Length: 115
Image 1 (cartoon, rainbow, N blue to C red):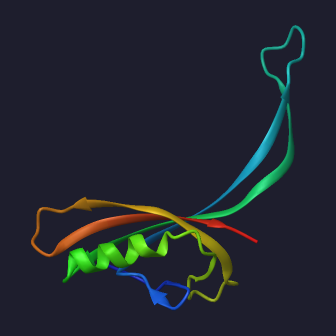
Image 2: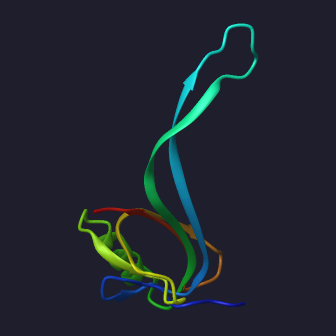
């Protein structure tokens, strides 16, 4: 299994397996009489979003608490450590899933770009 190193602020995230990069747009739709599809135009962006999925091993309760503590509304630098530019983000509450193995859990965390 291949994993990568990702840092949020000064904290390294546990065994990152996947990083999904999204960039949602704001669309305005105008109905066109007699047409089945509306005219859509882009009027802005929400900024970058990153969904990070990984595995926690070892001291699961402590690592879960650490991840939950990062979702405190404080903007920090997200460094994917892949050569791309760092992004200032907020972390949204992470989700956890038990794997059935002792001392192991999956996690998923959403990071949204912030100014």
